Length: 430
Ligand SMILES: *Cc1c(COP(=O)(O)O)cnc(C)c1O
Image 1 (cartoon, rainbow, N blue to C red):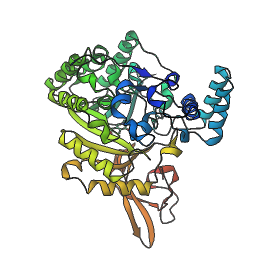
Image 2 (image 1 turned 135 degrees about the vertical axis):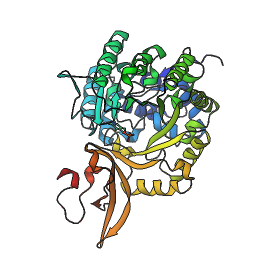
Image 3 (image 1 turned 135 degrees about the horizontal axis):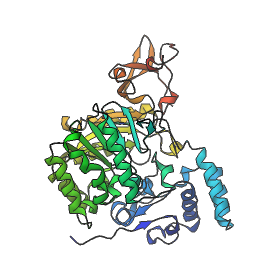
Image 4 (image 1 turned 180 degrees about the horizontal axis):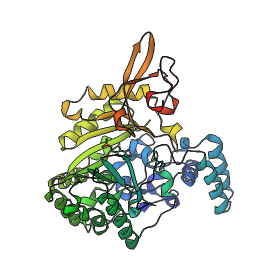
């Protein structure tokens, strides 16, 4: 296949993108205003192949990637529009944008390093070790994406950036040393941003050393990525696409499990020919593809969307893994869904698919104490309650112990929930 050139579009392109010419100049200005606060990036593949421009503004991928006026509170939106209309200095706009961002919980719970891993007494940057078996690594050069999702909980990290090979070598060295000292770790999860924005050579710095005998305790390498959806050419026709696949093959040949944790928000992202070709090429290396996504209002908030997405994934040999609850950050007010509705969508969607797709777990809140799943709603002793449980806990022993929260039809996150039966605290915070 012919090499496809990756082109990024940013806030400066919102005026002139031909696809946006059906919007009024006022509407484009509002998009531009939102993009002062929330980073905007889309690429040519997303724009030309994933968005149905006959279905604007309702197209889910358009809503996922292009700035939506409702993401900002009306007074904030008006303020920035006014500044733009009056050609205010960039620095002034930046200052207002920063003050708006600081009110949007840019570092949500669970993302903060409550417990920074240490190597010989020194903190190790770029890794997170929250659950005993699994270490997360955030390569510096992988802290961006091929396009930005409007709901992203890592949105604030896209505002600044930087990378270099030297730093990566030092960084991967620290992370490897840490893993040598932690024989209890079985899973390494390389995440971002999106590590697949890195060249094969750079990614190999993190992965290849793990294949040597001193890392025998590492059984699984996972790579969290949105690239299968946003730039599938990465695995098909990019200059080093074959090098990536060879790297995957070497992991599999070493006897480890390689899991590509693919982020798909909507079936539209897996129904293009190239997206399916990319999946097939990745699977041919022996890597497994597991899929996950958050539930987001106006984008994938119906059981039909999830059922069709999971069915297509199963057909293509992917394994559905998590349905997340949208995190407590950024434009949460715009994308959030009440927990009760999240559970209803999950419950209705799973019954439309066979057991092979019911490997998926959800709706899951990835929060400070751990990953908490909403098992359902029921009545106990005359009180309507949410039934919850941990599937991962800061303390492993919290897992698989059902607990109850008072039913609240408006609750959208763990922090909105109160213990049921008049208890003062949930069992894990006693
Ligand atoms: C989800 C998650 C993991 C992996 O948990 P699994 O249940 O194995 O998927 C590890 N670390 C953190 C911080 C996580 O959020």
